[in-house]
Length: 115
Image 1 (cartoon, rainbow, N blue to C red):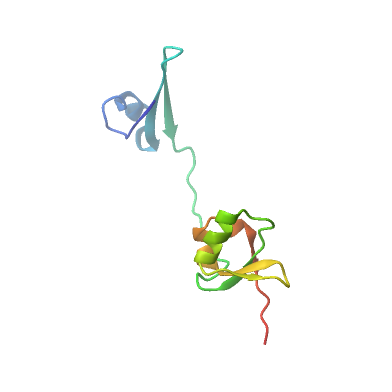
Image 2: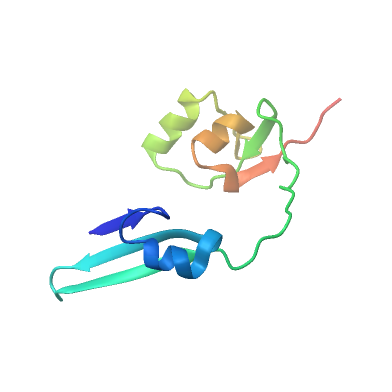
């Protein structure tokens, strides 16, 4: 069992005075078998400016999904999301947003543009 407390709650005051604004949370983990309670703190040790990477694909952009062999339930989910099988290239044609929703974004390849 785990109990997670935010700064300022009862059980965090000692750490709040020690770490101040850097304190993110205090966690209590309980091990009933060993009869132990472990207390951990999460603190901010460094903070830098960061820009997220540019989006690789637009949500409505059609992409190829190269999955290799997939089980029947996954194939049904791809088809239900609008995926079409391309037997010549052995890939699925699907909208990028649907591939992300299905958790298959790691298998995405950009489609070739045909004029």
